Image 1 (cartoon, one colour):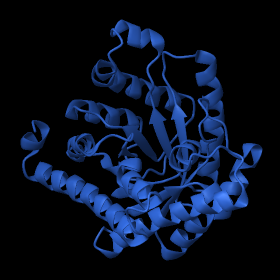
Image 2 (tube, one colour):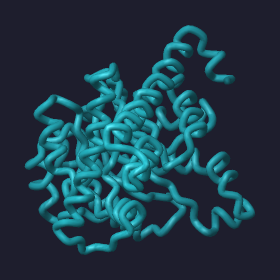
Image 3 (cartoon, one colour):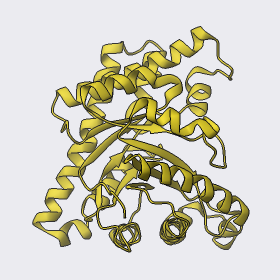
Length: 315
């Protein structure tokens, strides 16, 4: 039923658009041609960091990029030519509701770049707006069905933002929501979307603090004959220590095949490059080094778990 993807996957995502342009460049769309070229060049710099990480030892078969068509079209083509794993974002940037970036033309845009994955970022809370969830699921089924027909792999980036009522129940404590409620809501969202005909090959999910929650998320993703479906950890712009904790926890769980860490990998380097406190070469090296750190952290925890599962589970 499902193609699945259970090989190692170390993804550098830099498909950010609306927030990226506003925060890094202090620009508001529509951009001039000169402004758009500056943004594209900054993404080229990130890509150079990825390529450098591969050249310096990051596993080539596992390494991949996630970038947008608007500012990364040339990057996608070059990465595909070089044989890297590629993922193309399909959603409108900055929108609370999932809509296709190119509307009814979404399939043509995907096929023109021939990426390994078509990716959708979606905010989905099963206790949220029912009509919103239904509309999103209907569009996502279209994308899922297209990927199945074209033998294209589908990556689903699941965000589960708290509702006002949920936060109220927890006294406004966002940490308590992440720890005590979000893991269950993630599992319920996965099941609800599967029941709506949405069948990703990889679930890109927010980090989890407890091994048991990681295990239950994998169980939901792989239920009903979906044994090859993989899960990867997203970074959520968290600080380095938090990202490392999420990676160590996930790496010990079969079914978690890697990560997609974006802003925590490249943001400081880009800010320094923009401020001219880092040269381009230095910024590229910093991105490459950070990416290799994530690989070493994940693979080290994975090996440690294989040797002593209890030690990692209780670390």
